[in-house]
Image (cartoon, rainbow, N blue to C red; front, side, top):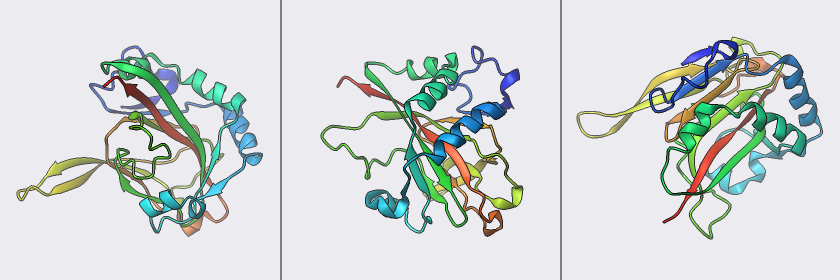
Length: 218
């Protein structure tokens, strides 16, 4: 489903029935400015300085990642307190603990993220026990403007088998990084971020992305 946030009824939507939700105009201009201002004071780490992640996603440029501060994190999570999210996360049995993990990201010209389904934990930081299971993936855009020639689209795929049993990925949805929009989708789902074009110049694809997760009793 793709709909304006102001027309969306979070009590009637179900990720069990529709695994992809795109909300246009989710953030106000003032809220986006709050995040952008916070980003200017953040400490950024480039992909090249994250060895495990860069091995998992080679030739992906040098996009940047930063932590969200407490004030902005509270604003972010409060607005995402939607019944449809809670209903989906709580639908899984034997939950021991719930987790969220969201960060700032900045993609400039030449940056991308190759196809993956968010289940590969080869680069997970904590290896002492199985990591939490990612249930819903989220990305939302807070840059002030974005041109269609600048790239950076989120591509979602539908996976199927061909006659030989090989996996084939068909494009299911192409989501432009429109300012203020938000995309949520159930995990696993193959997806990628298209490379930001040189035509973007100095413009950055600024986003907040991550997951709602659950940890379970064994």
